[in-house]
Amino acid sequence: MTDRIINVAVDGPAGAGKSSISRAAAAELGYIYVDTGALYRAVGLYALENGIPTSDAEAIAAMLGGVEVSLQFVDGAQQVLLNGRDVSAQIRTPEASMAASAVSAVPAVRDFLFETQRAIAREHSCIMDGRDIGTVVLPDAQVKVFLTAKPELRARRRYDELIAKGQTVEFKDVLDDLLERDYNDSHRAVAPLRPAPDGVVLDNSDLDLPASIAALIAIIKEKTNG
Ligand code: DC
Image (cartoon, rainbow, N blue to C red; front, top):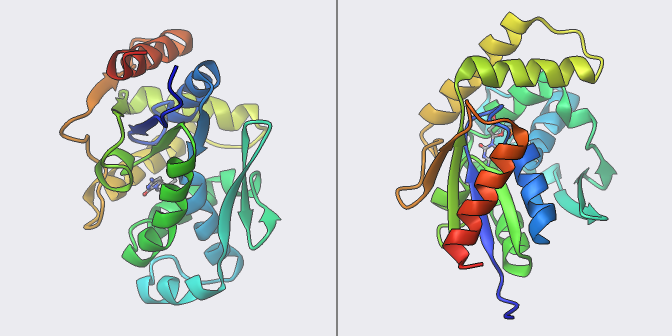
């Protein structure tokens, strides 16, 4: 039994189920689960709360001096702290999603969050999910997975989640938001969303949650000889 640190990068578009699948697989394997989108959401939330236009890259870069974002893990569950305040719930609104997508295109924001992500992966065996984990943040991760599914299915899952949380949303708006975010995330100049050349693409359009979790665990075990 070695206690080498295993890093698993899970990237993919919004609504592919990255967080539910990665969280469950991490629990099964005894790794921590790191949701890096939460970091971008916290930065987006700060901009929203302070009236800083998310389309103004210079203003976003300038505001970062006043931002401190960190993750803490309580009983394996991740909490996001923005200047010491737990904003784990506030970052989940549609407005925060769009703000996150906008600020994540600003290179200064990506640089700002880079070391926070690297430091966690250095210390812990983890499944880290995001958009550029396998390509930029953890290029040496032992396992890289690109998790995806058809847009309508991803929008349906996101819609069901928001409705379950009691939010009032229209399916068409959720789908439009998702397509817009897909476009933004994959066309930005810096760290665009794309599969790592040495990664495995897992399309879970035809898999339910347990089958998707099992598929991810199987890939991790195969790549780590576990
Ligand atoms: O995974 P999510 O929906 O919580 O991510 C929110 C936004 O943050 C998403 O539009 C893209 C961006 N993001 C990113 O650019 N890089 C990451 N590693 C994670 C998220």
